[in-house]
Image 1 (cartoon, rainbow, N blue to C red):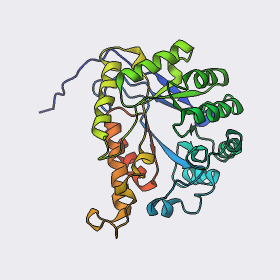
Image 2: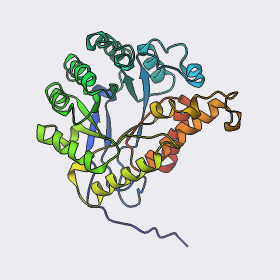
Image 3: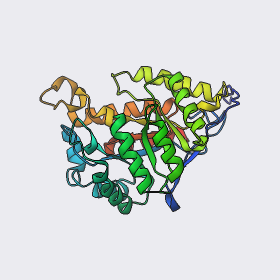
Length: 314
C-alpha cells in the first residue's frame, strides 16, 4: 500500500537571487515549500555551501583547521583556489579579519588588493565579509563595493546602522546585500523594509538571521528561522521572502568544545572528529529550517553536509 503523504498548500514564495557573475553565477532561493518538503512545492535551487577563507588568522586556529589548510592559511587567494580546485567549492566567503579594530585594524585600502587577488584566483561567486563593527564595516565594504563594480558580490553584514551607506553602495555598484539582524523576526522584517525603502530590490537581498553553534543557542536560532519561513510562505509577508544565509563554520570553530585538544578534554573525544561533527550537525540544523547558503570551514564537515543535501533532495 502506497504511503499517501499529507500535502499542505503554500501561497508565498522565496525570492530568487543570483550571486556572482559569468558562467559560474549561482541562483539561490525560489522555494515554494518548507525545506526539503518537495512533495508540497519546489526547491528549484538546492542549498549551497560557501567555503570560508580568512585574510588573517584569528587568535588561535584549531589544529584540525591547520591540518586542512596549513599550507595556504597565510595566502587568501591560494586558500580560495585550493577550496575550488581541490574541494569543489561553488562559493567563497572572504572574511576580512584583518580589519577588526580589536585586532590588526587594517585599513580599507589595504585589503582591496586581497579581494582583487581572490577574484582573479577563482571564478566562483564571492561573499565579502566584514567583522561586525559598524563603523569599520561601513568604510571597508563601501570601498569594496565601489572598487569591484558589477562583480555581483554579496556584502555582509549590512545592519541597521550601516544600511544606508552599504545599501546605496550595493545599488550603485551592482552587488547583493546580506541583511544581518540579531535573532529576531521583527528586526529582520524592519531591516528588509528599510533596505527596500532605500531602493534595494527584493531580489538583491539575502537575510542573515544570526547563527549560534551547537550548544550555544542553536535551538533559538532554529525557532526564529522557522518563524521567518512561516511568515514568508504561509503568511505571504513579502518583506520576509528572502533567501537565508548562515555563518556556521566561523561560529563553530571558535567555541571551547572545538578548540580544546584531545588531551585537554579527553572525555569529549578526539578533537578533529568532534569539531567536524559539531560543524556538520549545526549546518544540518540550519538547513532543515530553511538556510539557502551555509558558510562552513572544514572540508570533511562540508562533504558530510553536501551528501545530506543530495539525499534529502532525492
